[in-house]
Each structure stands twice: as C-alpha cells, then as structure tokens.
Length: 338
Ligand SMILES: NC(=O)c1ccc[n+]([C@@H]2O[C@H](COP(=O)([O-])OP(=O)(O)OC[C@H]3O[C@@H](n4cnc5c(N)ncnc54)[C@H](O)[C@@H]3O)[C@@H](O)[C@H]2O)c1
Image: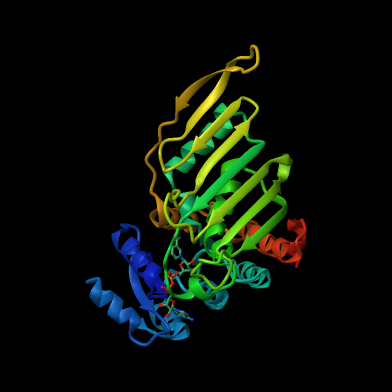
C-alpha cells in the first residue's frame, strides 16, 4: 500500500523510517507545510521518496495514496484528517486525536461521511509488557478495582510542547489515560484533577497533574505525573499498580510484570504467591499501529485507536483539564457532548 506522510518533524521522520522498514507499504509521498522540509528529511535519511511538497490538496491529487499518515502538531490534526477523508483516503493519525472535543467530533463525522477508517496511532498500546500486565490483571487478579500510574520524566523538548497549554495532560498523559482503558477494559465515567506548574518548570503550560478517574464498574484509576521531574525517571509507559479481588500486580521500569495472589486466607495477612509474567513478542510502538491499521483496512476489523473509541481517551484529557479549571469533579459524558 502507498502512504502519504504529512509532517516532517521529529515524529514524521520516525514514521518515514517505520513505513520504509515495513514490507506492507511504501512511502509514495511526503509533505510538510515548511517549504523543502520533506525533501530535506528524505535526503538526510537516504530515502528515495517519489513525491515531496508542501500542500495537502496537491499531494492527494498527484500521489493518489492508499492512506495518509498525519504527523503534524495536535492543532493541525483536524484539518489534515478531514481533508484526506473528504478525498476518500483513510487516515492513520498521531495522538492526541485533536486539540479540542469539537474538532474530534468533526473528524468522526468526516470518517462516517466518507465511510473510511480514521485510526489514532496510540503507539504505547503496542508494548509486550503492557499486554502481559493486562493478562495478569484479567487472569490472575480477577480484574482490577484500583489502578495507579506514576509518570515522572524531565523532558527538554523545545518546540510546541514548551508553549502549549496542558503539555503533560494533552500531549503525554493521553497515552497513560488510554493505557488505563486498555488495561482495565473499562471506560471513563468522571474525574477530579489538578494541573499545576512548579516554579522550576521550563514549560509555559502546566507540566504536572494529579487525577482520580472513576471508571465503569467502579474502578478508580489514579494518575500522578510530571514532565519537569529531573532524576529518578519512571518508564515512558509509567509505573503501574493494579489491585483486584485475588491480589496485586505491578509493572514498572519496563521490567516484567510481577503479581502476588492469594494462596490461603489465614490470620492478619493472606498468604500470597509471587509470579513474574513473561512477555510475548509483538510488533511494538508505531510498527504495531501501522500493522494493525493495514490489517484493518484489508479485513474491515475494528482496530485499537479507531476514532469512535479513541475519543473516549481524548475525553479523559479534556475532562481532566476542565476539572482542574473548575476545581470540581467533571462527568465524562458532559465532555463527550460538549
Ligand atoms: N507516539 C509517540 O510516541 C509520539 C512521539 C512524539 C510525537 N508524537 C506526536 O506526533 C505529532 C508530531 O510531533 P513532532 O514531535 O513530530 O512535532 P514537530 O513539531 O517536530 O513536527 C511537526 C511537523 O508538522 C509540520 N506541519 C505543521 N502544520 C502542517 C500542515 N498543515 N501540513 C503539513 N505539515 C505541517 C511542521 O512544519 C513540522 O515539521 C504530535 O501529534 C505529537 O504528539 C507522538
């Protein structure tokens, strides 16, 4: 299949590499609104890309791609996705889906009107450790009633993240929030959250957040994070703890998940046995989302990140931001309809 990549920044290059390595597709075209940026990127990466330019309408007409990969900044996702879908082309877009809920709904409508797939590449869903942790929660703990995630990384990106409002929650916590849905098989109901920016932060917007989500079935998912935490970094996937009726499990530092489950209820503490969950090999990160997207186009199967589902992860983000502004608990349904 022939891909048109839109955006030649840091992640655009990662996507070019990803598509180039795939046996299922080729880069048919690459554009960036910055004049010459896509051609420069392909030259620097030694990629023979047949078409480069800076205009999406021209590229859609001239390249006639089988799909578009949108790797632009979040506030551009809506316009690129709607234009590509209107031309009848399926879209695999970077997270977060959009920079507002109304944009996200427009993107869903565009997918419905065109009858074409719009999938968000929620790349952190494709991680062998995450899949093993989900298996532990389901099979060993008997589901989770408590789920915690800690994310502490001091990332000096420069660029749009330093300037945007809510850089942690909108640009990064979207991964962790989405992973909480993947791990627990639940959907968000409500949230109380606080965003804040410590005096030493190098971000203009709030780089820290704490949030308590009520999820369907009563699960509480608690998130604590900072993007200006120097030293003692957690993994990019966050450090996790799940507690269920049969025991507890942790997944941290991208090591194998560990569980302790009840073998005998006796005395003050139950007796538990500790087990380490092995991982199975999967296509990880954006290689995983590309593989799933192509399979979904070929088979019609519903992929992870399909827009009707992914908007629920995005709603967790905007509900957390709204809760922080209002200093009150916010219902996800309100955000989904807002
Ligand atoms: N999945 C991940 O792990 C991961 C990691 C990094 C970034 N991302 C996501 O990837 C996206 C891009 O991030 P980045 O770090 O590459 O940003 P970036 O700023 O480095 O690159 C974005 C590029 O898009 C171009 N662009 C802007 N408007 C455009 C338009 N209308 N048409 C064509 N090109 C346009 C810019 O000129 C720039 O070159 C963001 O949504 C970000 O959240 C995901």
